Amino acid sequence: MATRKSLEAKVTAAQKKLREAEETLTAHIRRNVMAVCGWSPPYGKGCGKKTSIGKLTYFQTHWYDDEPYREGSPREGEGQTQCPKCGQKLRFLDGTGNEHLEKYKYLFGKIVDVDPK
Ligand SMILES: [Zn+2]
Image (cartoon, rainbow, N blue to C red; front, side):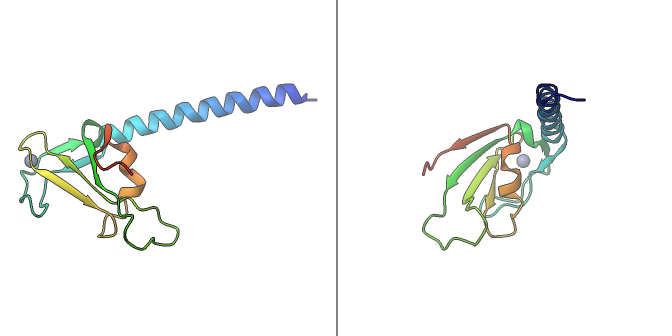
């Protein structure tokens, strides 16, 4: 019969394994999800270069505190990254078809908040 102590040790070991698996998955996604340098008004049409999202920096340029809060959805505001090949900025806007932003922003290699709350 398992003791409380042995069960707790198994739970701790399982939690450690889960954390390690999550870190491996995140690293895999950062290497394999590509950001494409494409059309991004008002900056331009882009050069088409694909870059692993983990190699890019996300610059948080705006938080949308002044607009109505969408129920159940965090406000991610607006951010940019920059193409390492041609230097074009690529914009990411909350609420304009970038619903994935709030889910995947953490995948960027680095996040710099240039508009701190
Ligand atoms: Zn480019």
